[in-house]
Each structure stands twice: as structure tokens, then as C-alpha cells.
Image 1 (tube, rainbow over the protein chains, first blue to last red):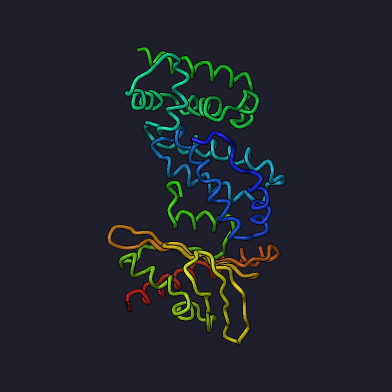
Image 2 (image 1 turned 30 degrees about the vertical axis):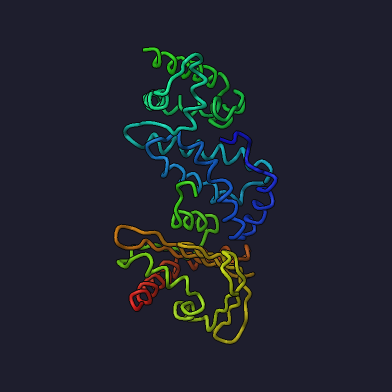
Length: 178
Length: 151
């Protein structure tokens, strides 16, 4: 998977045009941003990924006019997507599984672990974690944000991110060795 | 597009445009039969939109085309058209129109969206949405179904 941010140089003029009501630019922007939104939503709302992606994209495009700095679009899309994914995941009764790409990245958390069965088990493992823990793991381990940026996205103090992350990581490892 | 189908995509674009006209419905006809109506823009648009007298689309297989609409009183409008299976987005300086379709069981889920372009028309669009938008959109969907049934 390509870890680099989206080609945001391409996004900025599309954001400006879309803000002026250019539907074709909006469509291009939608195509550009959808894989990224999906990548954020899938591990947080694994059972309802399609709903989470749809609701995140609607929130992104509905709020597009209010984006003052098109260059900051990336961070804003991330914040909206995580917020919507958490909301959708909380709405559903049970929680399960994540996709292959996220599993590959999260397996690094497990250090020495190897083996072909990893994918399925890591997915099960994540499925048993709380939405809050999954959200913090996605932002820190998959998105690579620092604690301050993670705190901003989640709308909680940095200290909360630290403790939540610590609990998420240890819950993840403990569940693995069990 | 990454798990987002054509109708989802139009719903998102309509949200972005704050489109006063948006509706979707299940049509009890096969997707191919329904989409054939939209794919034939030149032949069908004048039937679907009473104020369009003529719609000429540049030839070729490209998904992005130029088109010219002539309205009932003879005024011309240049359009950019994006047309691919299940997806049609058309835009002039003044208006935007989108149509989307996906298979749904044995039938088709079809959506339509319309908006005026200048941002200054926002209040007009909001009033229109309240008064006429949903009704006009449903009438359009019925007309698509009627034209598809004739095929």
C-alpha cells in the first residue's frame, strides 16, 4: 500500500473549484479522497465500513465550503472521517474485523510474531477492542500521527491519547499472547 | 470507486452542491434497459426535460465530452459531460445535472440530482427545494421509467 499522503497539490485547486460549485471538480476530488477515507474508516468501523465511508464523505463534501485553507484539506478530511467512523461504529451493536492492509501495518506492533495465520487472528483481535482503542491505534500506528495531532483529531487532551494508546497497545499484545 | 457505487457517489456530490433537486428510487426494469435511456442523451434528454429542445453531444467514446443544449426558446448552452456506465454528470456555466444507476435485485436503483451553479442563488435553491425540488425529481424518475419501459 502507498503510505504517502494523497497528492494534495492536486487536491488544493479541486477544493477551490468545488467550493465555487463546480460539480466536475467535486467528482474528481471525490475520486481522489475516497480511498483515503476508506483506509481510515475500515479499521474503526469494520462491520459498517460502507456506511462509515458514505457518511464521512457526505460530511466532508457538505462541509467543503467552510474549508478556509485548501492546503489543510488533508487534516480536515482525516478528522471528519475518524469522527464519522467512530460514530457509525458505536451505533452498531457488535464490532468485528479489519482489512488486509491494516493488518499488515498493525502486525508490527506484535514484534516477533510471524506466520500465515496472522491476518485472521489480528482481525479478530482488533474486533474485540473498543472503538476508542481502534481509533487511537489507526491514527498512531497506521496514520503515523504524533500524540498532539491524534489528540486534535479525536478532540481529547494529549494525556488521554497517551493513556488510551498505552491501554490499546497493551490490550492488543495481551490479547495476542493469550 | 473503492466500494462507493454510482448512486452513493451522486448522493455525495448532491450533498456537496446542496442540490435542491435530488431523488432516488427503485425501478422495476433491468439496469441495462434503464441506463440505455440515459446513455442516449441526444435522443432522450428532450423527452425527459421539457425545456430542452435539442441536446447535441460530441461524437466519440471518451468518458468526457462536450455538448450543446438548445432550450425551448432557442438559447444555447455549452455543457461538459461525463458519461460512463451508471454515471452521468453534466455541467454548464449555469446548471449541473447528474444521473446514476446501479443494479438492485432484478431492477435498478436510479438517482437524479440538479442544481443551479452561481453561489449567489443559494437562497433561491433552498426555497426551490422546499417547494418544488422533490416533486420535480420524482416526476423525472417516473419519466425515466416510462421511457425505459418503451425500449
